Image 1 (cartoon, rainbow, N blue to C red):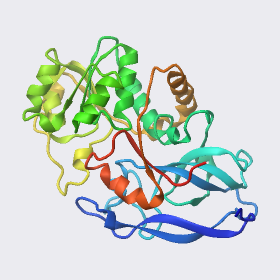
Image 2 (cartoon, rainbow, N blue to C red; image 1 turned 90 degrees about the horizontal axis):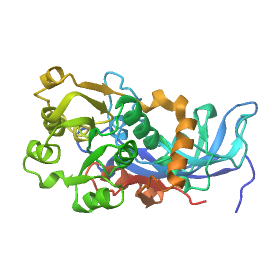
Image 3 (cartoon, rainbow, N blue to C red; image 1 turned 120 degrees about the horizontal axis):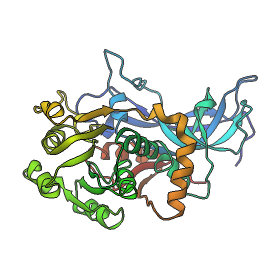
Image 4 (spheres, rainbow, N blue to C red; image 1 turned 180 degrees about the horizontal axis):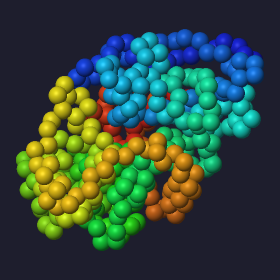
Length: 348
């Protein structure tokens, strides 16, 4: 039954029960039911969003730890809904640019309804002809990450040799396809034969390998890149980065997107051959997708064009219902997901 504006409605949410050290578990989170009011305070520029999809992203692991020194994103608050990017429908608005019924994406709660105090941090969805879930992935933050990190930070040239780790994930699958569109030779690594097959058959990678089956990663990279690597899109860190540095070509580029192999370690692993950065004049640069939000609508049009033309394809792994959220999030760190992991909160 539709509720009148301003009514209190039940609001299911996923909360963090305790701060995490080491590997997180589903039990660190809990699904509880609170209430939400489907109205904004009089005179407020806020909006209330009904969440349709929320995104599972590796960086959320860092927010589950209590940091003595502030991290680049704030720690989650115990007992409150987890926060991450999601897709929603505006239910109430005091903001002149957002109307009831608008479809939007932005930083929201892992809950059914979220009060958004600053709607200007959200983006309107301009291509509702695509699955709305795409706005947690290929047309949302991961897509913008791949586009900015590869094209702006990586500065690819036609004919470059490109290696992508975690290549079947939300960002990696797009980096590989953008590399192919640029005219590069692309090899990806993933953690299962199923994902390797996906990279070669669906995403058009030239080659791909299952890193879990390689006893010597350095030898594997020499096999696939006998002349070395021009661009390494870094998603995992640790021993993979170390092996890559030995196989970089002079003046290679390493856009550093993330290091998922390190997120659950009490002590991060060292990289012992960093002098290769000097010897090979490698440019290794970290980047934050937030720095590119001002280019979002340009990106959205470009990526929507690629999708319509069939030049880019996308694979999602959708968990149904907030109850499945904790397992879906934890699954990122064991490679359980195939493609972009997200949670369907409510279907439109």
